Length: 197
Image (cartoon, rainbow, N blue to C red):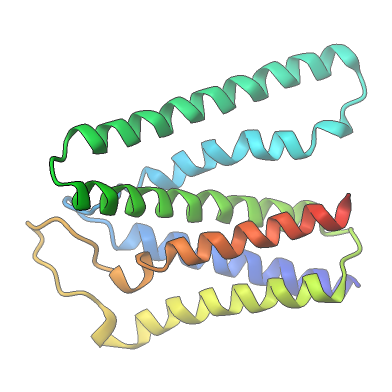
């Protein structure tokens, strides 16, 4: 069991670090998404982590403070997401561009936030017993994400040639898959909680 958890933790760390490194190393002045989204997504992940660990706290006074902090973080996260959505809707006139921008921004934040969650739960769940199915699903998802990133670095045809003065993504091959990576991570996290209930 310990060997399985070590393998899963190792792959989780490699996958998340590789994802963040690739994202941050391909940022430039006119990138569609700023590098700050890595920190912003960590902020979004914190109340979710707090929510999942709330039952550990037994002291009622501490639990009340904990809940207040957690709900404030949820509220602030909601306001940030709402302001991002409104900014994109107001600043664009073309409906298709609005939808495309919303999809791009939120797929990025979904993937980054779930990456933080996967990393956190891999560390905190190190001693937990895990089913074979859940272990295999985690390994498959992480290996797929690693292979997509490695393919980007190995295959020069996948590296977008972009002018430093135009808006776009240098690693479009990877960023266009963020929505799918994020959904796979969400399913892994949901599966984890279904198994622990």
